[in-house]
Image (cartoon, rainbow, N blue to C red; front, side, top):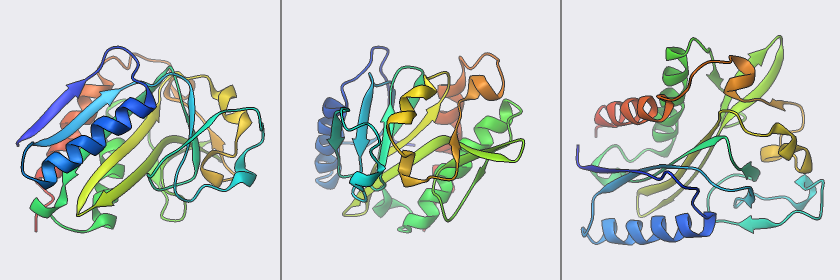
Amino acid sequence: MNIEIKKSKKPVKYEDALILMEKRLLDINQNNNKDLIWVLKHDSVYTAGTSFDKNDVIDSSINIIKTNRGGKITYHGPGQLIFYFVIDLNKRKKDIRTFISLIEKTIIDTLQFYNIDTFSDKENIGIWYNDNSVIKKVGAIGLRVSKWIAYHGFSLNVNNDLKKYSAIIPCGIKDKGITNLKEIKDQNYDELEDKLIQNFTLNLENLTF
């Protein structure tokens, strides 16, 4: 599969990541570059998607970057895995719901490798974990599609500081919690990004017309 896979060791500024993805989108649209998978980390940042509601901000002192991805407000920071992509759906099945299901399956299948059972929810997009009947989000998904090129991606909480979420109502969902993989099961997640890339690319191969 003709996809560039990029892994950034040092944290990438959110704004810089947006610029790179927007540039790649234009290049792909003009047939000047290949699809992209980009795994990275961000320093602490709150981002607001196109459905952002200011009432979801609890601490008014935080700095928020408004972005063109779908969804509401969320937090990115150390200990969180960011999985961005720029994928041309013109070459595949042009169905956004199917593509979101592909992302959900990628995360769920990957976490099953670590003996962690998670699930998706059509009402509340993301990946969820049942913690003794308390439903908590472990993965957030936010997309934008332009000319049938899908970009942005998902984040997965590994060992990040969950207190950072107290400044907001994450994704505008009031009745559910937030967790991370270390809190669910304290084990080695060093291979996590490689497993996600492997499952994502495998699922993409099955996304046909």
